[in-house]
Length: 96
Image (tube, rainbow, N blue to C red):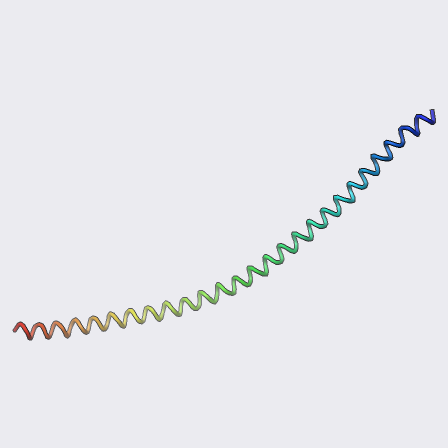
C-alpha cells in the first residue's frame, strides 16, 4: 500500500511544481507588461504635452498672420475704392 501512495505522490508533486512555476512566470510577465504599459503611457503624455506647446505657438502665430493679411486686404480695398472714385471723376470730366 505504501508503494501505491508513493506512486501517486510523484505525479501530484510534479503538478504542484508545474503550477508553482506557471504562477511565478505569469507574475513575472504581468509585472513586465505593467511596467511597459506605464512607460508607454508616461512617454505618450510627455509627447502630447510637447505637441500641445507647438500647437499653441502655431495658433498664436497664425492669428497674428491672419490679422496682418486682413489689414493688407482692407488697405488694398481702400486703395481700389480711391482709384475707382478718381477714375469716375476723370471719366465724368472726359464725357462732359
